[in-house]
Amino acid sequence: MAELQSVEQALEALLKGVESLPAEHLPCDQAAGRILAEAVSARLDVPPFDNSAMDGYALHHDDAGEWLEISQRIAAGAAGEPLRRGTCARIFTGGVIPPGADCVVMQERCNVEGLGVNTPREIPAGDNIRRRGRDVTVGDELLPAGVPLEAAALGHLAGQGITAVSVRRRPRVALLSTGDEIVDPGQPLGPGQIYNSNRPMLKRLLERFGADVVRVATIPDDAQGTRQALAAASREADVVITTGGVSVGEEDHVKAAVEALGELDLWRLAIRPGKPLALGRLPGGAHEARFVGLPGNPVSSFVGAWLFLRPLMGTLLGAPSLATLPRLIARANFTTTTGPRQHYMRVALAFTPEGIVAEAFRDQNSGVLSSCISADALAVVPPESRIEVGDTIACLWLNGG
Image (cartoon, rainbow, N blue to C red; front, side, top):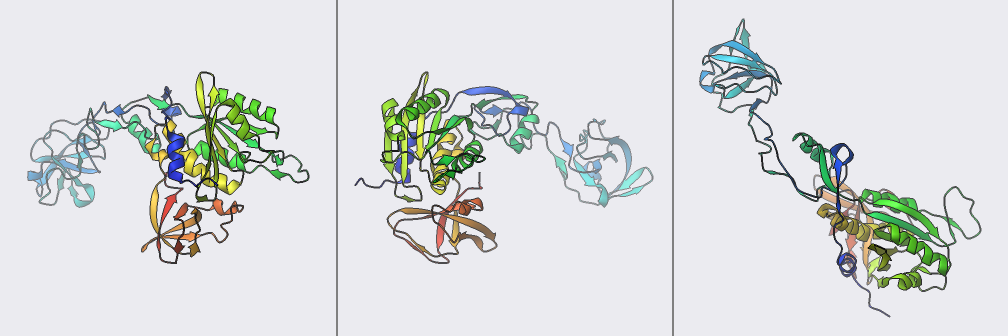
């Protein structure tokens, strides 16, 4: 029997030779969630001028503590005149600091008397002023390549007046289900048949990982139909994913079809759940498609998607934040014993003042998909280990990015 292999070995084989997909230019209002393909440099200082951090009075710090005439009013979006010494300017949040002023006193600390103001003494220079370029200076790297364009990043681009960016093309994925026993929801179940829970689960995970699922289909359990389905998928997709059908049973035709069309490497992994994994390549005309065969068991597919599909999508997108899962250290609030395979346990995390606590779902059987619904993380339990309550344990954080 072949030796069981590690996740790290399988990942190395999966990602070998994988390069980032080409870039495409998109308007910023269509680029939300996409991965930046090229670094963006700042065109403007942010803030673009010294401005007031609050409503109050702008003055020279040496004049603090004196009765000061209010010589002008400066609202946001307007520039004032140079400030005469011995006077102050009524200024509002975002207003331009006038030449001659070097601090702002918040209005709650001032006493207004007619056309003048009394301020506290010993106001430091620079107080309540947001200096030009405090956030960004012209020429600085505004955003690095590989960053997801989420809310703050899109705001950063807008603050520079940028309206379009270069982003990675999303990986095109074909998601194929195998087995005559698999039936789509909405259809009547025959004897021995089950509904396809893998397809909607994996489709949503792939979309979350940045992929564009361009084809979904069910492969019938016959050799010719399997080859035709895989060939058609590989012409359309960058990655072809199947669930089930990669064992050695006489009704499992995916293995033979991939070997006939391209290259296949079967892996028996030292993990639980999800021991079988198929990796390969399929000719796709002008390109070569990657092939990943996940187990048909939904929990194994769920875990396999996080361990293998997410890093693959992250590498294709040139996104380091997707290529690796965030790792947290938690205290176990459960006991377990592992055998020769590393166990990825579904756990809920509690962030307490004393630290992070991992609570394992009671039933860790690979057929219990409900354990994945509220799982915050996969606790990584090494082979031949005994975990007691209070022990520290590494967790792959599913909600961390």
